[in-house]
Structure formats: structure tokens, C-alpha cells
Image 1: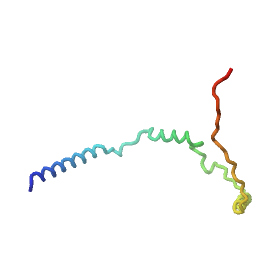
Image 2: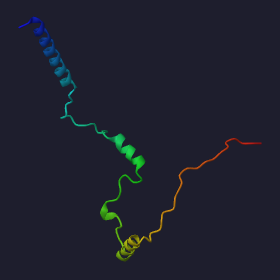
Image 3: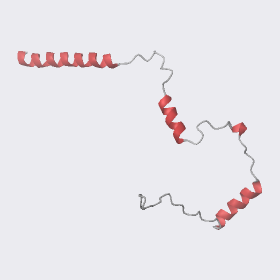
Image 4: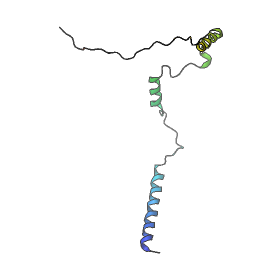
Length: 101
């Protein structure tokens, strides 16, 4: 066996062993309990973006539906007699900004 070839293999083996050891050091102990505040930032962001992040339970919500009105709505939809929604603009433009005397 050529000593030059053996040197590359041993360097490669040592490098691979060091890589495995360094990756093993990065492993986290998953048996530890999470912090009590884990996920607070996500819940806070959701609360800011959702009108009611914790809605009432389904049993508390009013679910009464008039079946006749529902049928009339479906029939109107099938006949193409549904009112088109009104376009709403969310952009406003203004000019000026100073007070004139």
C-alpha cells in the first residue's frame, strides 16, 4: 500500500470523526421540558391579527338558519340573479400638509 494514499485516508477518517463529534454536540436534549413562555410570541402575533383569537365554543354560537331563505339563495345563485358586490377602495389620497395663514 502506498503511504501517500494511506495518509489521505487517515486524514479523511479523522476529519469525518471530528465532523460527527461536532454534530453530536449540536444535538439538543429533547427530554427537557419547554419553557413556560414557549410560543408566547406566536400567540401574541395571532392575537394582533385575528379579530377574536379564542372564539366561543360551537355550542355557544347561534347557528339558527332559515331553510327557506337558504333554498331561495341557492336558486337565485343558479339563476344568475345574485347581486354583484360593490367595489370598495382602501386607498385614499390627500394633498397638502401645512397650515397657511
